[in-house]
View 1 (spheres, rainbow, N blue to C red):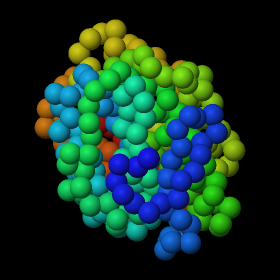
View 2 (cartoon, helix red, strand yellow; view 1 turned 60 degrees about the vertical axis):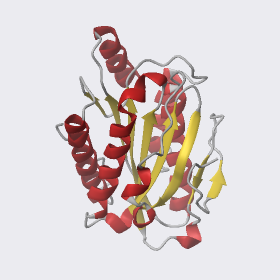
View 3 (cartoon, helix red, strand yellow; view 1 turned 90 degrees about the horizontal axis):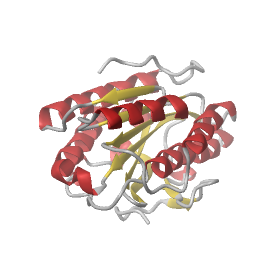
View 4 (cartoon, rainbow, N blue to C red; view 1 turned 90 degrees about the vertical axis):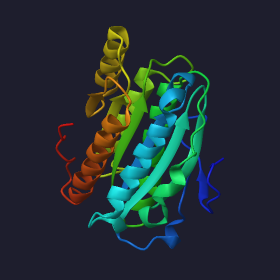
Length: 246
């Protein structure tokens, strides 16, 4: 169930034990949308910089609300430790108040990284199909933010890769950009693990941050908001946006 008390429609994701929620199609006001999903790791090791992650999410929302494409963005936020929790489902950016993300995450548990990535992609695919069936133009961008290796998922790397492939090959969304963010990665084995996961699953881009202080996460917020803007601007071209440098 969503953490935020929004009146959204509950839907299921094929192959995932977790569903998602989204704004009812009849309540949407634009003709095209970029679906944005942020999946944030809240396992126990994230506790020390949980507040910084929340601030980063708030800054992403604040920056995107200033974009000329703000009316064509919908955001979903999920948090994952040993299980997956939807903070809120897909809703127009105008309904996402930046300050509301303070205190929205609760850290603890292990890391269901694959489940979160699979659900993040699968929900965009499912919701994107519903939108395209009603003549909306749709593309998507996914950010998965984590500080460690998977140790709790039912899904596999192969399952994540299949979901990413199906998102576009199934013509459910026009294009999909997927960005894996390794945050506070200081151990060489974790760095290699996340780079391997990114490559094998087929993420568009891997970004690695060696710490999680406020300055670094402010840069991440800027990078994310710029990536969202260029992906949204590419809608109608039938191609994903070019990857930006961090």
